[in-house]
Image 1 (tube, helix red, strand yellow):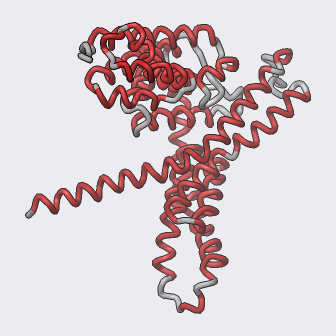
Image 2: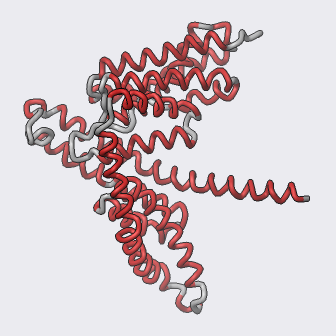
Image 3: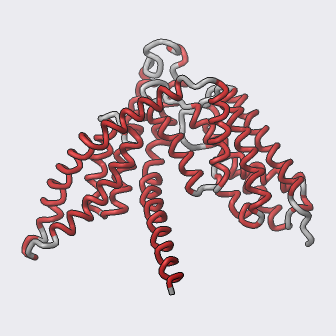
Length: 358
């Protein structure tokens, strides 16, 4: 039957999307410790250096601050190579790791930054797959040469050519355009962007849309790394991801009749997850009642993201939730934005959810 054939194609398409997502997540999960460790150390450097605030020395004015900034900066500078390396390794296994790492460095040094590193990772992985096919015609006696000579040398040469002449020029231009566009944004459009990014974090709780917003947030951090590494975009993204679990936790307390006793017990863990910026805590609740839980959470997250932008909050770390509030600029208003979004979502959810008959 024709219908079966088309469903097979759909499966293959789906699995390609899933594959790409899996490779990307392999890169992101390996990258995160570098970004978190580095980002927070850099943030601490600025905290230890208040006496030089506003001067050119800010962040490395004292020897203690300089130590933190140096170590944090080194870890942070590994972000793109590690991202690209582990995307590549996920596709082409060990021979692809080196290609991805060097491709990520080429992206960082060539101005194409985070997006360039994403390209580098996929290019590195697929280059190895192509080279495997090409070199499969060689006699078996040369099998041992492939991993120690052919893949590294020919792969690196091709990676260098592709990054330098194909990927970097347009991606660097796009980055400059994006930076300019973000810098020239009016308050209104910033607030709107905060709303969209916040809501995206909350629509699929850790799925592709959430990750797209998150990757955009970390990319904006990476772009800011010359200055005090601090990003209003990252702040809107993080707050958007913190709202859903908090909203659910509040809702289980305020509207007890709408939840089973088991759900009410797990409400407490959602408080911890929300404060820690683990959006995934909302998944079981969303799965059991998506039409009521998801839109109300997305609305609350959007409002929190919009308020975060309106108050000019910015955050230097890509993760950590309430634990990095000490380094958030204008943290009292950030906290207020978080509370407002969470309470709004919780109250709306309480009103639209049906009573549970236990």
